[in-house]
Image 1 (cartoon, rainbow, N blue to C red):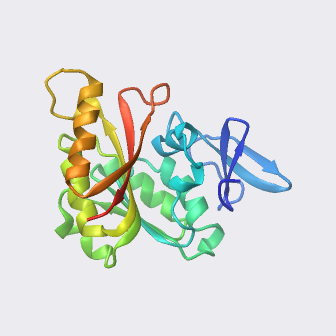
Image 2 (cartoon, rainbow, N blue to C red; image 1 turned 180 degrees about the vertical axis):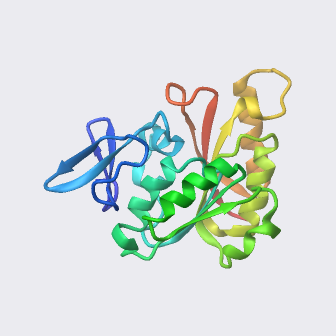
Amino acid sequence: MLSWAIRLDGRTLWSENAVFGASVYGESLRKFSGTEYRRWDPTRSKLAAAILRTKRNKSLLLPEPGSTVLYLGAGHGTSISHLHDHLCGADNDLNGRIVAVDLAPRCLRDLTYLARSRTGLVPILGDARKHTSWGVLVPHPVNWLFQDVAQSGQVEIFVTACRRFLNLGGLGLLSLKAASERWTGEGEHVLFNKVATQLTESGFEVEERIKLTGYEDNHVLFVTRRVE
């Protein structure tokens, strides 16, 4: 078990289903010792892919159950739903909260539908760069922030958001797609090295760089700790 709700069975991730009998995106359901779990597909979730690929303790990538987290670039809710299983539990018995921000109205519709059965999920239609329009919904700094936005300037967006919303010592996860960044074609390895340097110079300790190749090509997930 990686947490009370997340388990690794062989090479497959599962999360204890907070809404019994419900599949969110067509994922399979399975019972372990009488408890229903949902298969967490790493080809559709960069967080799941990173958990499977990390060379460290896998549970270190997960937030504290019952805490408040910020997720920028929430998409249609695949990762969000499994994160909710872990963070909130059935009927939000753990009193967790996921503030999920996305710029696409279609994604917001899917997230809003998901939130109807998953208390603690707070969908927001907003630009990750424009905190003034939605930042009031995160009144206190969080200890876990995840960013997955396919826009140029991903690092600047991440650094600015962390300075506003992430506690000192908090964990910031940046899923970075090479093709979305401004670069001169010198090679992905050079680009990712530059990103690591930029993060370090911006007050973050880069704890790990996780290549997601095979699940998400051209992607690296930076595991960082805010130290300044």
